[in-house]
Structures are given as C-alpha cells and as structure tokens.
Image (cartoon, rainbow over the protein chains, first blue to last red):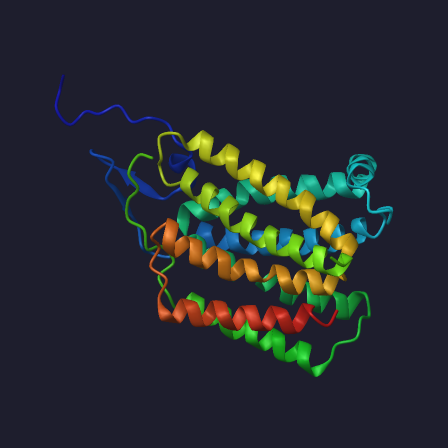
Length: 162
Length: 110
C-alpha cells in the first residue's frame, strides 16, 4: 500500500472543526478567530435568550402538585415545551459547531451574555424593574466576557483515540 | 428535608450533570473514534438534567434556581481543565468568576 495515503474515518470533527487532518491522528488547528465561531456564538446567545424566556413561561403553566410523572405528561402536551425542544435541537447543532472551533471553557462563559440580553428584554418589553445591583451584575458579566475574549479561543491541539 | 433544600440539591446536581454532558459533547467533536457514544451519552445526560431542572423550578423561585445554576460555569471550567486538558489561564478564571458573580447579582434578585 502506498505510504502516506491513509483512510480517514468519519467523525463529526470533520463537519464541525476547522482543521487539517494529516497522518497519525495529528490535527493542526487554525488559531485565527474564525468568523463562523463569532456567528455561532451570536446565534447561541440569541437561541439561549429565546429558550430562557419561553421555558420560563412554559414552566409557569405546569401543575404544582409535585408529581414528576404528571409534569412529564404536561410537558409532552404543551406546545410551548415543544417549541423549547425545537430550540434545544437548534442549539445542539449550533453548539457542536462552536465546540469544534473553541474550547468548552471559552465558549460556555461567553454565552452567558444571554443573561444580559434576557435582562434587557425583560426591562424593555416586560417592564420589569431593574435595580442598581442588577445593573452592577450586568457590568460584571460584560467585564468577565471581555477577560475571556482576551484568551486563546482554542488551546487543544490534538486528541488521541478514546 | 424541606422542599427548598431539595430544590437547591436538584439544581446543584444539574450543574454537575451540565459539566459532564458538555465534556462528553466536546469529546465527540475532538476526533475520537467512538464519537457517537460520546454524543449519545452527552445528549442523554443533558435530557435528564433538563427534566430534573424542570422539577427543581417547581420547588424553587426561578431567580434562585438561575442563580444557583450559574455554578455550572465553575463546574464546566474545572472539568474542561481536568478532563479535557484545556489551558485555563488566570485571565480566563478571572473572567469566569466575574461572570459568575454578575449572573448571581442579575438573576438572584428576579
């Protein structure tokens, strides 16, 4: 057999990661911040915002008798929960794409920006009150995300077969 | 054990399950041979977590539940460092801690 020509097995890494596969499982990763990572994170924040708002409203419709089985039945019959599941599905595939391009410890904290968007939407559209501590909290989140954004988005260079 | 204590315990369990589930999903995109097993276990864990969390929301105020669930930021970062060998620098830890405090302040009062 010709040397250097190796059969590359399919893995979702090929779909979700910016990479070059060479021999011996070596994977070289582009360190430039990919545009699709920025888009993916933006979409993740949007979906997470919608998810939090819809889930919150859906949970309020559940019976408060404490029975898990009745709750599961109610969940399956409630169109809001069906929409929650749809959003979770979208989030799942988008999240896999993000994880292909970034560290878990980088991407997860950045998506906390959804707390900021939920807060502003609640104040602007639901007319919920905002106090000084909450605004201070928003500042903490924004500064925290800035700190994270100053770190390398991808620190892993290869993964051996597990 | 009071209902509130059970609710807090359930949310804390959810934060740990979130960390494990996310680590499994990350493993699936890292080029592992049995990626489908990682992804399957990850999805199962996250579905179980969602069901537990939904029940926890019935025992706790939504604000309190959200505030406690922000602990998942810490658990995910720790698991990324220990299980995935990601380089979590001091700057990243500072960012995570600031976000954790910030989320606590924002949602803890809702």
